[in-house]
Length: 264
Length: 261
Image (tube, rainbow over the protein chains, first blue to last red):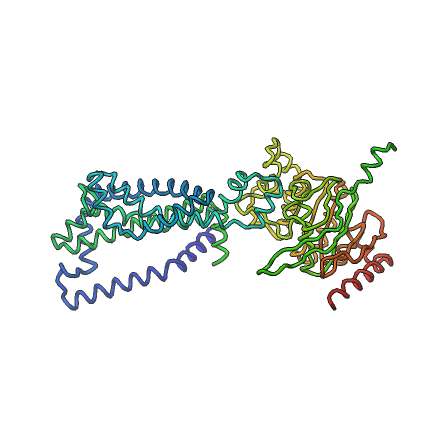
């Protein structure tokens, strides 16, 4: 038991150690340089100053974090459900694929920065336009991954199950859909990293609460240390969401997690 | 014996007459099977050997109804099987266990598709005979090669068909496991009284298991048919008996002519 714990610890150290070491090194370098050059705080504060201002702002940040996370999570959920439904339709009907796919790709060329103000004009400054921005940003990677995953099923496996007398519907439910799960989860991981950023951008264009608003206020008043503190919070939130999806993936599709383990 | 039962006994489980099969690869028409004739009687164990790529798997796919022949007749139990899936139990070369299903869930796939009740109980009752006891809830990637093959075999048996098409089921196993699996398969075959059409490229395996062995040529035609004159149940010591050695010599000579061509 103890040995098992040690080996898990050692594996984590091997997996995450190098990245942590690099981050620590870069922060140290930044600290040293900003002290040596005596950079003014509004231009580039030292990491220790950012840490201190984070400590001061932490009690104030709570409601803003809650607002951003709510928008990100709701938008993400909306994107997930509609993306999977649309992907299934695209997969089922060739006409749907030919009609929708080009539109879908084109929609990705429209910058979120341009969309967010439009949605604010249409839907006001409440939660809804933020949820919609997040959903629009997260939608595409999940659709593309799901459509790809549904086509990725092993042909021989499909032949075998068809040979057992399966109907088209049974083939879809019992083979193609589960075969697509690993792809769907990779799409979901990419979308998870977009979701927080989407919410922040939406809040930028008009909000009464949220990290985007907080960021805007801090940068407008040249509180650069606060800007960095919020950036750090956004990054941590994105990583946490990514981790959640990873965890869900391992629970829903334990066979893929094991494959990754042996591939390492 | 009445005329009716006499007829039923005479109807072969599988019959191929003048079967041709072609497929197109990069614009080229390739003939995989050329005028194949083959019969398997009910309850018989028949093997087909031949060089790799000679169309053995293609033939099984045709009988299973997954692909269609370009000419000829294929009958299962006296009825045309062309384009009809589900008449036989087909076990392809790769075990093709669904990676997201446990051993038990994989095994019951056939009955599940037909919506049969009690399927899990039936599969569970078979687990120890298939050497899978205690692995009902294990995913395929946790199983050894031999166990995966036995799980695929259980899935094939639970399809409840009289005829089994087995495509090199032991090809990927080491020699020791392979020998064990052969004896185990013969046990299952005797017990369940099924008809088996077995594809392999291993001459000894074919002789040890079969009542008759066909040799397929490189151009996809049956060039030789050898009846194996060995008593049942088969034992390992028989592999040194004169009739075994004689059959082996005949089959090897025929196969060698193919590889030297």
